[in-house]
Image 1 (cartoon, rainbow, N blue to C red):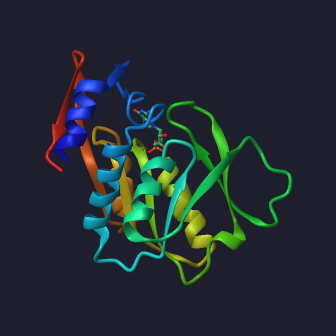
Image 2 (image 1 turned 180 degrees about the horizontal axis):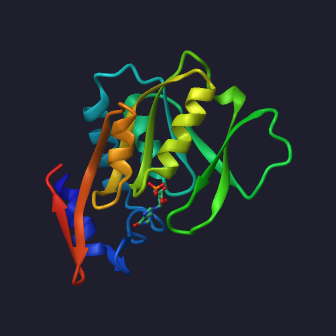
Image 3 (image 1 turned 90 degrees about the vertical axis):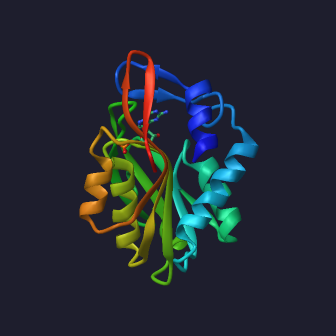
Length: 191
Ligand code: 5GP
């Protein structure tokens, strides 16, 4: 998605050798026009599927998921991150390792937010090692719902997330795929 490549190139910054900071248009300030286009492209990529719900994880996934939900005309559910849970009875829960924070947190969705009839499109802001997406897939499985696919805004293709998700037989569509980061430059794969 050329508009997104341009935003990453011109408004993104690189931290260390593997983190991309996009606080100027996605993760802190949100560029509503760009996000609206992102939602429409997710719709184009997954319109062949009878998507009934979008699921994401707080906080970075919420904005693109909301726009995808708007394009599909379906509700959006975001999984909540909590340090640890004492009462797990009324929620589906998975432990997920955060790539950026390097800690585990419990990720939960209330049982009444998903049903076996749901065909769920997972949307997230970044794909690194696939931990967040794998946790959401497990939650959707716990609800006996099905996964339509995974829509990612920015995939770091030099990390193992895509391979891990494709091994599960799930369609992954990323709007920007970063091949490598080096010397302060970002190189894209054609997506
Ligand atoms: P994964 O679970 O695939 O290892 O990492 C994806 C999650 O970690 C996303 O939900 C995102 O919040 C965060 N993340 C991973 N890499 C980056 C990055 O380079 N920049 C930002 N801003 N978030 C990232």
